[in-house]
Length: 298
Image (cartoon, rainbow, N blue to C red; front, side, top):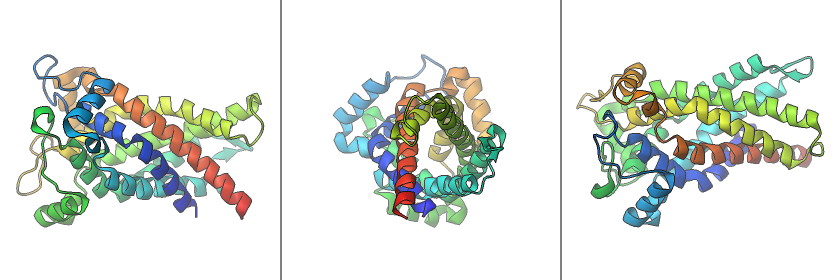
């Protein structure tokens, strides 16, 4: 039940934040491996990107990749949050009744690794679908997928089972870092807010406030890994399934840093916060409330 509740909570958040995921993906691919000022800027900022995509690709364009996005959230976050919930209820992350920051970070990272490996093929398809755009505003490599099942079948047909897990070398550090930052910060923030006694014990405002604090830490820690992950998943490949731009996580990280500088690794930071921030707040809030409801019902 922990896994199901966690997956449902993440899907609830995804329904609201998927358009921001599309915007984030496009901004992270814009000017790929090009120095500042040497490429055409289609998306000037989050709001301009949102307007441009809606105007050119239509409102449906802002919900590209929604189906794989929901599946990814259900399976990846179901496994990740569900695993953490089991570890938490076992008492591992607590020392003398208090949240242990090191233990909660390790538990969050471990749960993130499992979730990232499980969800990698769906994330691959989601990224490629979200990058597809009308030629006048297209950035990054353009795949011609007709939908999630077509994308999965085409990838498997051309590159086999290994091709479905291409890019997982970036997914594992991305999700493990994000998960460690998110869950450890959420647990300690929730405890801190309870200690302040600003809200009544058990109030939904405790989880909401802790989620808001966690969201800032997650975005700052995760964005460079997110940029690398997006680019690895979306890069073109040869007939053997090898990337034509990057050989792996370290190569993509170093190439991006050399060509685009530190700001290149934080490209789309505003879009990342507008997407990851609300998603973190909503998913953790839904997760907390669903778990409380289930405990009361049981």
